[in-house]
Image 1 (cartoon, rainbow, N blue to C red):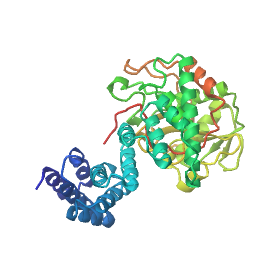
Image 2: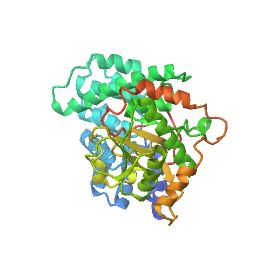
Image 3: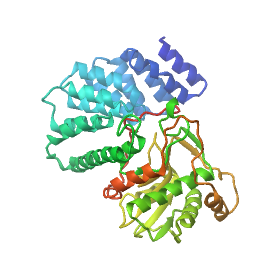
Length: 417
């Protein structure tokens, strides 16, 4: 048996399916297709994914058949293990180089693994005859996510409108994203950022890609791979109060004054919403999708009921969506207009606190709004620079669709596997 299969079986014998999946990463593009397919079959059977198991069996039996390789790659992407799709799809494309289906599925697999620069190389390597839709659109998309705004804008300038209406929405979102990213770069330059839209400009890229304003940067681990994001956050009243302070500053800088604070039904949402109402001096009201001129407060949108979350995708007039802890590794289906911070996992201080919501909200209201001292490695993020950034983007803020952007973009951060 191969090392890959040995490791998979070792983890499966311990009923550790996540460990078995992780054990395949080092082998995903070095093992033979047959070996990789056999290991994937074992994973799929353990997970009860018969579609993936069947595709893996077929690819193991027929590793030189493009259709079998496509089916395996497609099933891996659909089941959330895109890194295992790359090798079979590459091999399929090598055998059938003119297949647009294999090409676009390989792009999808690389995208799910945030390998945007590899997508750019793959599509650029197809030469000047690359079709406009969807291939050149995808080239623009991944060039931007890889951090090259100028090249993305240059290619996009020659991209015709799609003839197929199914791509019209994507085309419009791409134009908005390019415009916002250009505005973010100019805004960060005006605000004195040392690297506007570079590999450390988390706030600039967050606005450019999502249309949302990022309130704070992590004061810890900047030079240890986090670049302003959190991996695990043990939340505190001070962190919540700091976020509300930055929200108030953003609203002032943008000339926005909501009439109410809308409370979502989750306990953490209500606690933070009650605190926000006091900090901002606004009445708190139950959330209603059609309510105008209101600040909707969410603690963590991934914890929101999916049916309720869908009502937040379309923006009511004057509605502002505030999320405290936005997950950057698995972003919510609806993007917030303002996020206090970006984290992978968050644990609220009050998760085991049985006191009334109003009392816990008071802890936030009374907490200090100043950032903690951190580890000394995080660059300064003064209120003046934050205010200048929001002032510079105020005309475009709160106008973008709240679409999910799955990629963290070109600013790297370490994460838990």
